[in-house]
Amino acid sequence: MVNIMMRRLVRHGPATLIISLPADWVKSKGLKEKDEVEVSDRGNELVIKLKESKRKDSITADITHLDRTSIILLLQAIYRAGFSKVLLTFNSPETVHFRTKKKISFSALIHYLLYRFVGFEISKETDNTIELTQISSIDQEEVEPMIKRTFILLNNMVDSFIAAVKSNSLDELEKIEQQHESLTKLVSYSIRAITRGEYSIKESYISLSHVLANIDKIADILKYVSRDCVQKNIVIDTRLHVLFNLFQDSFQRYGKLCRKYDEKLIFEISSNRDAYKDKLAKIEPNLSLHDLKLGLSLAQALELLFDLLEWRMSLQIKDSD
Image 1 (cartoon, rainbow, N blue to C red):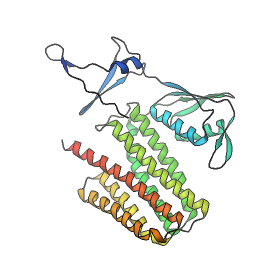
Image 2: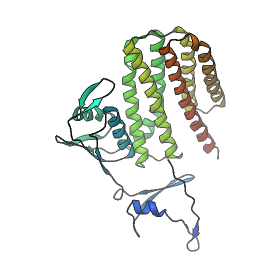
Image 3: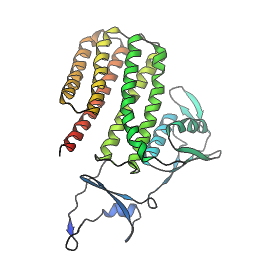
Image 4: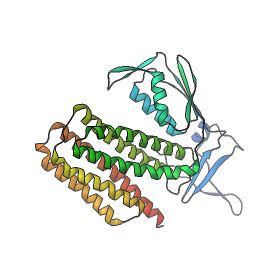
């Protein structure tokens, strides 16, 4: 949550205006008189951040009582928050994976997760601790292309998913999970770069981080739907195909909108959203529980896309100022 505070400009000398920094923030960061902070000019925003020497760059987390999924979420949050060193502690060697109802060692899980965290490696490991350290810094020139690539990968994932569910290809649906891993990796890297201030952007960095997180959520929905179809060997009702077409068309139009702003595309995406709801309501009584769940899951993904649509419109408004 963003805590917005108003500050009054105070004249200091003949040509200088100053503002005070929030006392609680100054205290929590250990700042004192004559310390230096970095100030970045981002159009209508001035971003104040700590110098590298003042930034809290390490964190310790006890994961003893967390399950596999919770640990993944925690480490993802730590990575995206920009920490350079992470010490994980645990009192037992294993945790539980609720979905498979199996035990998994903390060590095996952390080694598996390293794929998602670009630039991190295990620097030290004992029976009760694992230390992760950043071994390579973010290349600022790579960040913008990687952010753009997240949008491309999302569209590719949607196209692959729709082709797989229309053909009831379980082999192709299994590949959706691999695409999800690649997309999540890019999203986490991009959010980390933004958080650490290693990517200069005109729009609000908070807004862009939110958009990237929403892309991750859409990818999650496609992953879970695909996994459910594969595990239950589901043959999907062909009456859902009309919904699939609307879903795919919306994401394709959004891809075009990201490349070039066009109000007609916004109109068509909005029209697809309501058409999807209407058509789902009409066929709902004749659908199996699984097919209904699939239809509702994709409807949720369309709502997240609508959030991305608002962000794209806000960028256009800022560009026209």
